[in-house]
Amino acid sequence: MKQSRPAPDLWLFICIFALLAIGIVMVYSAGAVLAFHDYGDSFYFVKRQLLFAGLGIAAMFVTANVDYRIWRKYARPGLLLCFALLILVLIPGIGVVRGGARSWLGISSFGIQPSEFMKLGMILFLSKWLSRKDYDISSFTRGLLPPLGLIGLAFGLIMMQPDLGTGTVMLGASLLIVFTAGARWKHLGFLALGGAAGFVGLIAAAPYRLKRITAFLDPWSDPLGAGYQIIQSLYAIGPGGLGGLGLGMSRQKYSYVPEPQTDFIFSILAEELGFIGGLIVLLLFLVLVWRGMRVAMTMPDAFGSLLAAGIVGMVAVQVVINIGVVIGMMPVTGITLPLISYGGSSLTLMLTALGILLNLSRYAR
Image 1: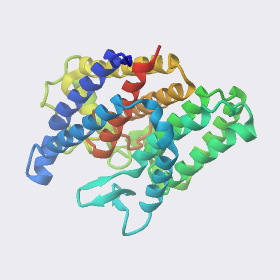
Image 2: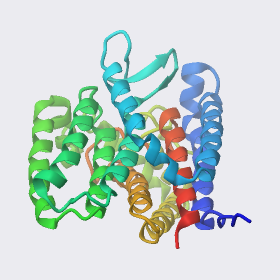
Image 3: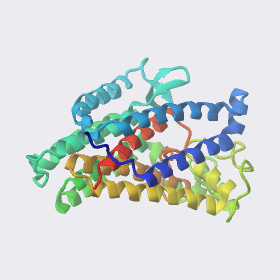
Image 4: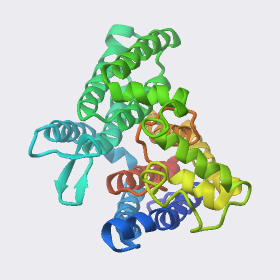
């Protein structure tokens, strides 16, 4: 008789659905005013979020019940498809420009963001590639440079849109896989210096990115321009105090904080639910990352370990960047808060990836 696998990690399951529930409530609360102003329907954003959440939960149910080892078979064609979509989105007339970036494929208000798919596609392929028993990651030229070249190619295509935020998350999660696979500290140190120089070059090459850096250092130097988002975000967080103004009582969502239902939703959450509400969200993410890394460290094979580390890294990097931006600790990059912010591709892909993590937890020792 075939032995059944244990149930997925309960703590992971609780954290995922708790964060998703908080996100749906906050998307309505933060976006109702803007939705009514732009679309004449206060429920416009939350109805679409519920639709994407339903699709994501269905995908998560599938990936949570499919043996994770099957993704080895589809890792290469999946990555090739992601590269094809990244190239396709750059073609004028096919790629849709939103928010100044040509990063969408779709019709009207419905679309997909190929760079979101690349995050998971790269994680799956690197996990397969670097888990081969004959692969020597400790060699700089034969082991480390090939995957870095592949990561760099994907990052370059994403930057051509341009989308620095999503590219940074993909880069961070990929480098965590490379580190977990056993890359040498010395090699990574040299690459970190080169990467820092590259980021400086990217910032200097685009005037709007340079303005974001100066606004991060001193937002009051341009309070109605580059510093506006950070200032309004802090104006939302400050009055929240310990317990908040109350759910639905935000003042900054009335056309002060830009995109309150997406990138800056945490500032509205902190204004309405206060320090306690923000702390609960952070603790849920912390438990999710802890349980995910526990899965990565107790998997019976290298592929599962690297896959779990990559998915957890994708979540952790995105959370750190988003909240860092909202509280004024990082320059504005345009990153959503996983499971909380409004978004179709990002929410669906995140739930799909977390479904894989739930499946991995069934095999962890």
